[in-house]
Image (cartoon, rainbow, N blue to C red; front, side, top):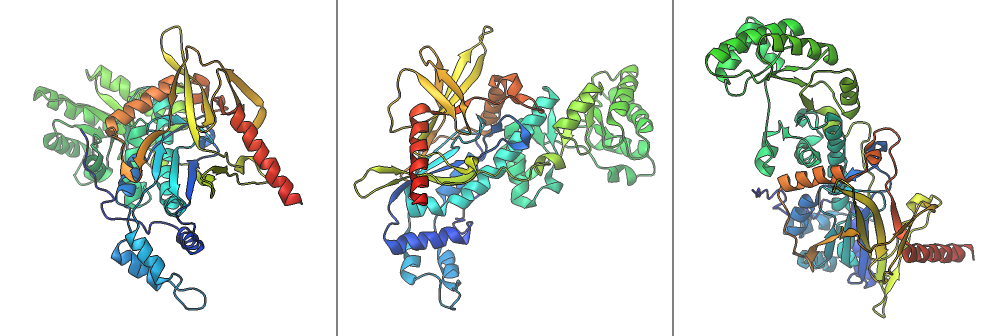
Length: 497
């Protein structure tokens, strides 16, 4: 089922940094606003010191671009912006140009739910340089955040080893839009459900929830509170047991659970939100089993993340369901992905592509030139399970040979030869917009979540380690690597003259 969200039904063309509009104005004034260019959106380092990321946010990008336009109100506001001389920053003719602007770029992107790695273009934009520039900030805003949250959720999913993960982060998220985007990205990354009811409505994500400590405190005693909740929610009865005394709370939950059972209903489980989760879950499991509630689940919450889950599992905690809030929706311990948006090609007056690189004293900040595509090679294991072998960044304008050598852009000594005969491969960047028109049939969120599960299964186990993960092979095809090196040397020589 596809959900009709219309999140960005009103244009958000002004959701950008001022320098994007001042550059657009400069292109217009210089007469090069229609000059064709190529920009790539990519990140430079894997988040959370991990070995991978999960691509997310394309659905939001589609909503944003589909409604991209400058409204009359936008133009009126831009007309009020003044320069340091007190005069309007933009000419009226330029503002009329923006008012009549129609988006005509090509956009290619990697589908959501795919494992992605540093330096790979997640989004490639080709079209008039003015238009490519105007959408830089919103694209980064969308992809940076949702990819970060989806990756955090995937790491938690790995730690939980197939046990349900509930996203509880609404109250700690960064604003309304941040909460919605986080709930969506968390589900894409592997969470089972969300507590965010509006996200459930917009995206079709399953919703879940129990009750708070205030429910228990609203009654004379814990048994009365549990009984009242069981009476109100006999088909959704999970009881929070740690308001006063956790193990006494488990006893009271069992007492109410027995009454539910006599009515033909079921105590689904208990939730523990504080204290020594390993100890209390082990004791609670014994008590529940002895009372005949072997199928009752134990839900744990309390500032959990992938590292705490891993620790609890090594302590043999008897937890069946994980409730994750703050540390998921705030991407705890890494506040930003740090993706960037860089020009890689510009058409000259002869209609040919000039390839572009940005130089830096830091090698990691020298971008890759050209009109890039990412080809992912797969291998077939003995158990017939498909696995990821390597990703090759190549230029679509340079013919490929029968054998490929890929070179790590950050370490020329790390090379891998790929003989493509008999290997399955996939071109990761797919058409999304052509001349401003949507051509991509976006899958629903449940299909995207399944793609994340598939991606995680295909990743080598070493890449999924939380500590010192293996580095997945990603490299520039040899011809592109040499072209980049020549461009860098040429520009450095010019700078030295």
